[in-house]
Length: 227
Image 1 (cartoon, rainbow, N blue to C red):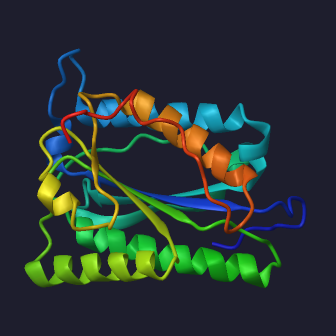
Image 2 (image 1 turned 90 degrees about the vertical axis):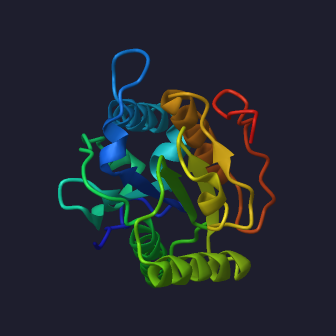
């Protein structure tokens, strides 16, 4: 996807969301909803929060890759979109969890985003990749190993910042393989709190200069303290 930067030459902070939309995300929650419903509410709140922040609105870019869903595949559901044009859309849960394939797509589009920004003369902070899953990857061992290796190499090469979030029931030892940073576990179904944190964190990143050390908001409002 080509973005026209002529009317908004501001620095960008790209963030790709790697979202588990497998069948297990249909699991009912204590409030009568489902995990996928709570995730969809969180994404709507992310849109709202970004659009209420005048700096993030013109500097944050989002993309969404899903693992699972009706196609039972890893899919780029939304290519790079500036926050000002971002409109949340409902995700459906079904199928298995090809998380490794989704992560590799995420890494590919991060590199494409950087290429497009460079070609357009737009500065950017280090892109983010946030992986959110509630289950066990169903990729083959070879696919998973390759995806983990690519994530670790991209992280070590300072090409991307990777954050991993396990929803209740996730195989946290598997999630821990993705990044050198320890994984965080969501407390209950606090997707709303998670996406409020993400919006505030992206806002902080968008205000920084490339190479700055970031002080991110506390994860206490949504993080399970047992992990």
